[in-house]
Image (cartoon, rainbow, N blue to C red; front, top):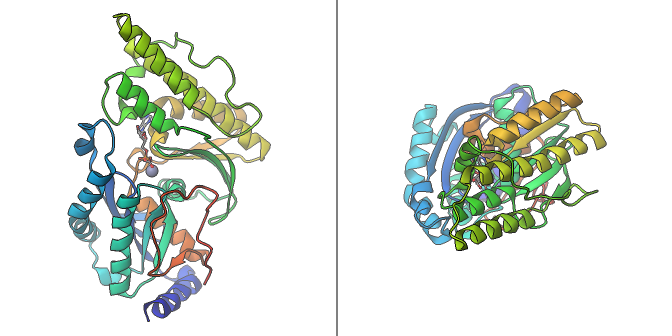
Length: 363
Ligand code: KG4
Ligand code: ZN
């Protein structure tokens, strides 16, 4: 039986990891990137191939789920071959297959999960179920070789905005999360309204450098006395502001809107992150997710960290967006914690949140 072989190998990896190298193949397909990477001992990237579908979805102004699933299917084989080739290894060298099983688009996740199951089964190696959000945190282990928990983590992506206390490699405590839109989602929606295209983060970040923070979109502290976030009010205020100007035939101060939006939203992220570090007496803040590439967020958090004696970590830019290396790294840390082994019944779970820090099974 596959699961018996997998359990035996998993236990063996768990018991011997200190004395040997472990190669994990990581698969990520939760949204519009088909990504496969091979990572050694959770920290060293041997290959990291990302096939992005951005151009395909840009013409629709956002990700079309069914189109995403079909394109994952079309390219996943060649992404795997390229990842193996670039790493200079064969499937026989791989010790475990880690895959994003949630959160994300159901059809897109299913492609990666089914592919990972087939691979793990045919290779007779353990299958490790990885929460995408935890992967974003682990991207930092690849960039900062000495970084270890505990720390506070700020996750900012297209689907999530959250503050998490990372207690150790497998145990997290959710401190707060958005009660409505994710911050990346707001970037994308504001950009769409300004006709700046998809995805909106990079282009708003760029435009924001040319404008002034002279339009007040946030008039009060959002969600005070909690580590939760709320961005839908800001988003709606901005969208209404844009529509009103358009209806009156007035010229849109695009750069000023971008600067004001970015400054005000990043102030909110910075202020809550620093408060969380102080409250939980953590001297390390680790940022993850697509929006961690944002230049204003990087600048402000670094400065606030210096002022408050907190060391702030960001993933290198190429690891801030979705990739397979972060999934492989997270898979490694689950293995050495004795967690995360999945069977052939693993299914895609589009709505897992940060409260789900791992699969319950412990073998
Ligand atoms: O983590 P990610 O690649 O996918 C999800 O898990 O959602 O994040 C994608 C999000 C998009 O909303 C994109 O607009 C945003 O990250 N993003 C940025 C920047 N680069 C990407 N947002 C702000 N500034 C950026 N430089
Ligand atoms: Zn992501």
